[in-house]
Image 1 (spheres, rainbow over the protein chains, first blue to last red):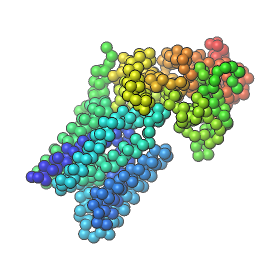
Image 2: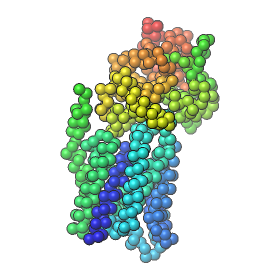
Image 3: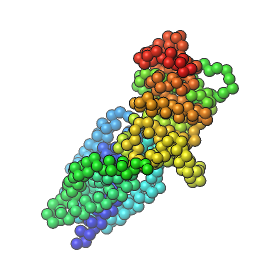
Image 4: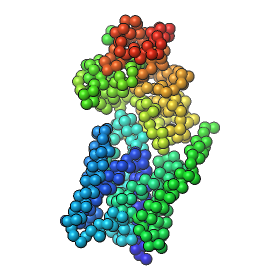
Length: 272
Length: 256
C-alpha cells in the first residue's frame, strides 16, 4: 500500500499549492492563461523524452517560458491576448506530440502526463511537491497584501508604487510550477479543473481571499481523497475521478447554496 | 490661460497629443492646474477624458508635448496623487471587504518602514469616519451602492496623504441626492487639497467646482467657473453635450 499512501500524501500536498494559486487565478481571471501554460508544458515533456532528460524538468522550463511569454503579452497589449495565448497553447502541445512521435517506444509514458498517474508518484515527486508548497505558502505570506491590491486594482497599485508587472509575472511563474506538479496527479488536460473548482466553490461560502484559500485547500484534499478511493475500488483512472468528484461538488454547490450565501453574508455584516 | 497670481501650477500640460493606433484621443492639449484648484473637466464620452487622466498619472505616454506634475515627471509625481477610479471599473464579485480596500492605500508607505505603514493603518479609521464609510468596513465591496463605493475609493486615496486628488467620473450613474453629498464632501476636501475631476455631466459639476475645462479631443479651457455665450460658441463641439442638459450657462451663473 505504499503507492497508495504516497498518492494520498501527494493529494494533500498538491491541494495546498493548488488552493492558493487557484484562488489568485480565479480572482485575476487568468484561467485561460493557466490552461495555456499547462498545455504548453507538454512541449517540454516531449523534448525531455526525446533528448533523454527528465520530462518534468522539460515541463518546468517550457511552462515557465510560456508563463513569461503569455504574461508579457497579456500585460502589455490589451487586445487579441486570447488569440496569442491560444496559439502558444496549441504550439506547445504540437511540439510535444511531434517529439513524442520521434521518440519511438516511449509514447505510453507520455500518456501519463496527459491523464495523470497518481499511483506512480515517487518519494522524489513528494519532495518536489513539498518544496513547491513551501515556495507558494511563503510567497503568499510575504506578499498577501500586495497581491490582493494588485488583483483588485492594478492601476491604483501601480500609482502607489507597487511593482505590478513583477508581481504579476511572479504569480504566473508560481502558476507554471503548480501546473507542472498538478500535471503528475490529474494530467495536463484536467489541470485547470483542479486549479479553479475548489476556489470557485469556496467563494460561494466565504468572501475573503484568505478564507477562500483555506476552504479551497480543504475541499481539494477532500476531492482527491474521495476520487482516489473511488478510482481504486472501481479500477478507474484516478485523475479523471478526482475531477469528476470536484465537478459534481461544484454543481451541487450551485444548487444548494444558490443566492443564500451572499444574503446571509450581507446580513451578518450589517452595521449595528 | 491662467490668471497672474502667486499660486504655483501643480499640473501642467503643454501641447499634448495622445492616442492609440492612428486614432487621436487628445490633440494639442495645454492645461494648467494650480495649487488649491477645484477643476472640473467636462466633455462627451470618448472625448479623451480618461486618456488625459492617464497621462497625468504617467500610465500613458503622450505622442507629443510636455507633462509636468508637482514640478517633475508624472512617473515620479504620481505617488503623490490620490487617484479615485470609476466605481464601475471593478469586478463586483471580487472577494474583498471595505476596510481591506482602504488599507490598500497604506502599501504606499511600505518602503518608508513599518512604522509609517502602522501610522497609515491607524489613520484609516479617521479617514473612513470622515468619508462616512466606517460603519461599512466589514461589508463586501461589491455589495455596496455606487455612492458608498465612491466614498470607499475616496477614503483609499486619502489615506495615501496626497497633494492632488484626481477623480474619474465620481458621480456616474448616481442619483442627484448622492451626487450632491459627494460634491459637498469634495468641496470640504478642497480646503486642503487640489482637486481635479473629469465627468461627462455638466449638471453635477457646475455648482461646486471653481474652474471648468471643456474637452473633446481638443481642450477648450476656460479658467472661470461661469461659461459665457462666447465660450459656448467657441467650444461648439463640447457644448453639444452641455446643450443636451438644458441651458448650462444659466445654471452656472445662478450658482456663481
